Amino acid sequence: MRQLKITKNITSRNSEALDRYLTEIAREPLLTPDEEAALARSIHKGGPEGEAARDRLVRGNLRFVVSVAKQYQHQGISLTDLINEGNMGLVKAAEKFDETRGFKFISYAVWWIRQSIMEALAVKSRIVRMPLNQVGIYGKATKTAETFLQEHGRLPSNHELAEILDVEESQIAAAMNASSRTTSIDAPLGNEDDGSMADLLSSDDSRMKSDSSLDKESMHQFINDLLREVLNTREQKIIKESFGIGEMEKSLEEIADSLGMTRERIRQVREKALRKIRFSKYASTLRQYLE
Image 1 (tube, one colour):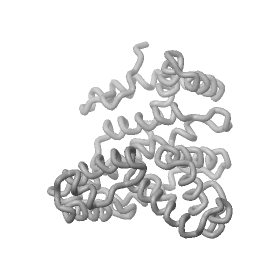
Image 2 (tube, one colour):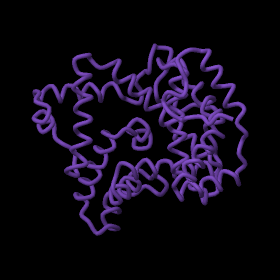
Image 3 (tube, helix red, strand yellow):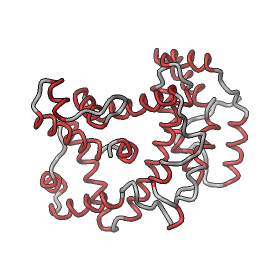
Image 4 (cartoon, helix red, strand yellow):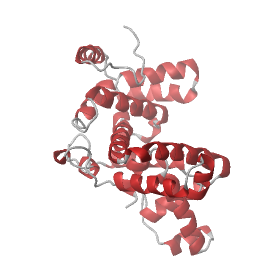
């Protein structure tokens, strides 16, 4: 069988190509939990065998991405594009899956699939709702902020962004404020009947929610992986303890005592961490756990 390439161009925009794609992935044999675990171990080793194992793990779960993507239709993004975004999340999950935790791969992967799809929806919603003259400034400011963070270990002020981009500071502030208004978790995603991001997050679909301890653990691993990509070790600890992510929620005083720091310093680190999250590509997903 021809090996599928997992890229953003995996499906075309016409229904005929989509039908061919759906037919092809339906032929992929499903994987047993033992097979998934073996593939995950190969992925961790890296190299050509690791890449082949990742592709096999992904191909065995592509049909599930389609079922998730269909739940997010009619929000202004085509089904083929939703599937493409979900596939990117599936690849990310395959690279990060910890087979020693005991839960099925798809129980963990579904969080990455949803995150990728919802981020695409959030970006579309933000761009559509922002005034056109602010879209370009916001995009440049966001990229500049990410580069600045990598170089200086902190996010730039609006004044610094304005100097780097050679625009008025008021323009930066206006674009950032517009973005904050348009990315609210309760903001409608499309037409009035389409609902909000919060509606999608609180979906009662039984496939997306479970009370089992293993599914909760897979969710915690997903959140931890997101935080690990955005924050340093100390910031992760403070955020997780401040908001009770995977553990009991603690006050700033309790966190300060455990880390041997002042309450004010803990507050400062937490605010810096929240700003980093706000500027990250995972902002719309993490927001639901930090409110």
